[in-house]
Length: 577
Image (cartoon, rainbow, N blue to C red; front, top):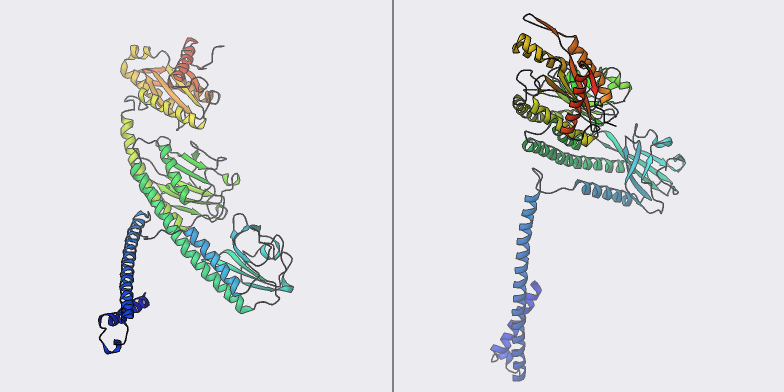
């Protein structure tokens, strides 16, 4: 552009002198015709210069607009990035692929190799996965291969840079080739991140003695640089994971409604933990306020194991430090002092190997915790324990809010005399259990119970003695069922029990036990010494009813049938043929 300006200015000056100053001595002999031609050329030159100037001004205007829009877009991009503390969106996966590709290309061109391959080692599957390769040979390396053979069987256990000449290359040294090419020299260089073996770089040449120790050191240096780059990418990736983890924690803290069921809360918490931790089983467990036993409240993962409602033996087990409000990190159950997981000798049944657990405490609930377990040894590290601890503190606060709300709600749903659920609460619990049963395909058994000849207690001894019999009967019924079952006062001298995850036949022993315990108890108070009997009717969801009203009606009919038969017995509802 500068040359155009200079030529234009010189041309205009010359033409101007010829045209404007024709009387100058140097121009005296120039014919008038030529002078007229010069005038025309001057006009053309000036016109060209004006067009040139207008074009440049237009180009400058466009460039300014482009720069302005670029700045605006850059500002929008920065505002739209969701990560904290980063001004640019970083695609770690793309960066990893670029670095890997460039490294393989550099090694290939620097050493004039036939083929350069990069494999990463999968410890779980004991195999190698191809990441990148560059080859001048038509035979491509395999996408994966097992860690076996003379060279690769234990290479991951004792990795070191190796240089093999033609005579040293064994038949299975090129196991990663489906169709091995002719190779005269082979180099294997391990890739280590934080001193841990993660894979290798393989370099081969058709020439014998193609490389020496200096070349081996060069590729080893490349491998170290690559490991450092991967470590940086991993740090960025981990930061992004932490950011998402804390965002999820914030979300569950702010968006959880007070009316949410604990089961649904545990499910949402498990979804967050699944994003950040690798586990084969997750367990939430708390000490039951009534039985003082540690009971599983939520499970996710391995199904061939303990599930919701199972009681846990604490002493000498993995839950003992958790209940003592201490975190637990087990690298290998077999090498730890812990004798069992949930019950004695259960490690022989399902071979869990490592565990990570933290206590969860609230102002209302007794001690409890969350336990993550894996079939792999050394699955968890100290950093994982710290992160899970942060989750534990946040989740404990959520539990605290919910349990306070639930306790206030329970005050309105508890029968003032017996201390068990009232009629309204019973129907709500039954609907909840039916909904859950429909989701998971479980059975529910309902018991309707009525004290036989209760009216004579009130008529003979008075209502205070009648209240005493009702309170004692409620306690007997509650102590005769599982902690996960619901006991309620249905009305007057009638009670109701919801037995979850169970059919009528499996619950018959429970019903008989209640009947026996009531009849075997001696009710003594201020001169009253009486034995009571109770009639029990049983119905099952969904076979005896598909909603709250129908299942209650079925159990009620069975109970009245037991009364008509003389009382003090259990009758199962049966459909009329």
